[in-house]
Image (tube, rainbow over all chains, first blue to last red; front, top):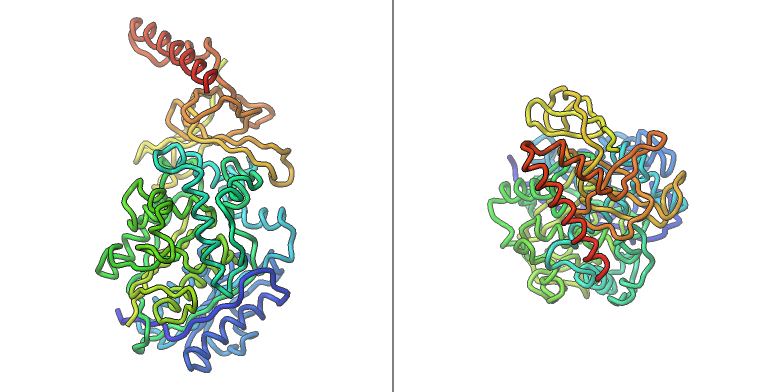
Length: 374
Length: 142
């Protein structure tokens, strides 16, 4: 297996955007190519979760490839629900590691804000088990079920969960690419509208538009891909025995650290899939970044704050940077690349090893990507 | 009256799921049909205040661990007094399953069917009733 390096990375500002999905993806893709000093890659990997229904376009690898001006470049589309961006990164990584391509452009994006919220929820909900969906289960509903089980455990209460949102909103104040650049207080979170008891509005990520892209290469560059791991689990939540953790994350972390040849103790900054604030606490433990049962305390004690022992979601996370579905896994990696190369501006942390964690569906198809600065 | 819920068992790993699936989610083998008692314990529950189209707010959804081992998703009329571990009965109304707090007679009947010797049965019924009274007291004081 060849070493794979990130040669260029870029993303759009995340939020409510007027541009088309193709224009957003072009902004990120052309930005990443410029950053890589490359006009055209050997291959293209495209990530979108559901362009057929969100924007009405299919055959999307060719659609985007042609729009970008790369009609002659071999292109594939990758989809694993909300972790599609991370899966596309793996598809590009694998091609370079196998020696099949010298350079691959990976671009992910989603355009959702032009639809009303019930319609967006319905489209995202397509990734849920059909039987559970027939009982009205939405992503927030399943996350609510998981959160109640989590809160029955010692050490995770409303304040610990709220602090995740408070921290990530505070981080996003320094991120010009973030959807929300607005601080929230613990009280605001605890008093926000109930969505799926015990989950409240300010526990949940927003509906966002945006795109992100990276260029991968077999030539030595500033950031090396140390490990990529995937883990999967049952589509139905009712088919799982343990709801206080995600088996798909644990499997992905095991695989990624095994490839990297080191453990979680080397990780110095992490971008974690906090589509719902309690998921950051669950994931910190699944990834082995804090000991079992300690995520709540670690968060309240500021260990995961930007100036803490292990900065988590310096970008603002899905909660405040935003969650344009298939863009998210790549936006996390872009943030990690910028952090490792000293390009994160006022939110810069000191780190040589970064970890990105992406959840697909209700933790049915998860990814862990580990990057190392040269 | 305890209803019966259709489920299926994996001949490889013995996992039971409900409703029945053709293949085990974790093994590529055909499952065997089983019947499960429509009663169990609350694993978790939530209330949706902006449910999807076709559902009325507030929408109560519960995850229940059935006596036979399978976890089951159902609706409920309310969640007042409900907590993780609460014993509930499940019944179908127009093919939609709902949970409700389990009555004393139903609990006795369940234990009667499950326990082996007569002494165990009597003990189980007493335990069940005691637990219920104790839980009721807790609810009243919290």
